[in-house]
Length: 530
Image (cartoon, rainbow, N blue to C red):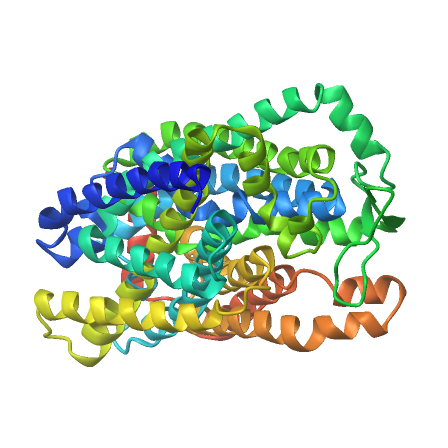
């Protein structure tokens, strides 16, 4: 290890020690009860709720996946995704947050998403709870694997160590931290990590633009690549049989720009629909101290998201000026290292370590959320809610830690392939949550006629359709030209979300209406102060 690597390691190690310190500080409070461990005793303030929600949501793909997409094929895909996410963030905080905070208190003081859905429909046989918990377990295991991929790529790139070994080290750190402090420690550290993330993005963007000769030089360089700066076309890197971009005369080769039509734009914008179903954000709505504080949280979250997404996309564009032929960026997978490469090239080693701690911050803030929510789904909702209803709080906590270990092991196995593209892994899990829980949450909060049968049918339809569209229907798009091919290749979240909505409405209307008690809960949730 050379002197530069050592300085980066010192900076990142110091950051990791601070995070572990937060976990230890909150460990005693977290372990008092499962409510404290899983939802922090509903004690979050507006700043922590907002910043921790966005940090846990964005994960390492914000600093690696999104800049990598922009670097590889231009701004269209990355920018439309960012626009969809920014709009989804604002609408989610505006429409969902206050109603969910109130309704979760009315619905048996629910502390998990499966708890809320089950109590919302006053079910005795915990079918909704079980289905919701299983889908959470499946999709969060995939999500956690994307975070482990991020850790592996980061440490491997920084220290020249084998990817698999570094990925396992990162996973071990995450599981240790999550074991210690639970939701409250996670939320407080996520607040700090959100600050680190936005600092890292802003620093690299500003310093990079200065090094490149100003924003005009960056734009001129990007404009010289066919389709790179267009919102309605995409750049086409010329690659060999191994997917490596070709270089000639010290310049990367690009072919003619590819199309980016209206259907593709709608597909990409549909990323915003995912917000209605992602548990890591919804739990912050449920955990805030007072529903009246959510307005302030909405403003904080929206500003953070807009700045961070803009900076992430522009870093990808900047990378084409400052590192156009870097050998570590010449494939769609390795292009996700552009943030790391720029950090190493532009900053002193110690400061680069601090900035790259932003990637670690993003990864930790997301993976601990994913692991904790998945563990709560099994221990609280299946173990205690379904199998052993008289299980003690202590046994629930023990089971949750066993589940944490099991999920980590499976996530590590999924992440063993170092050619995994973080953006694609996250996209699939995001679609899973958006389509499984998003439609049901909207109807649960705003349509009193939705019933238990519609809820079950809608969840199953949304969750299953994500797999069917991704694995069966989307691959057919390569064999079909024209509009039909574009429709078949659409992001799986959109068709699964729409179909789930249709099924919820149809099944609810064809089956008996909800009971008077459920309707009373619905009306109470409109006005209750909590």
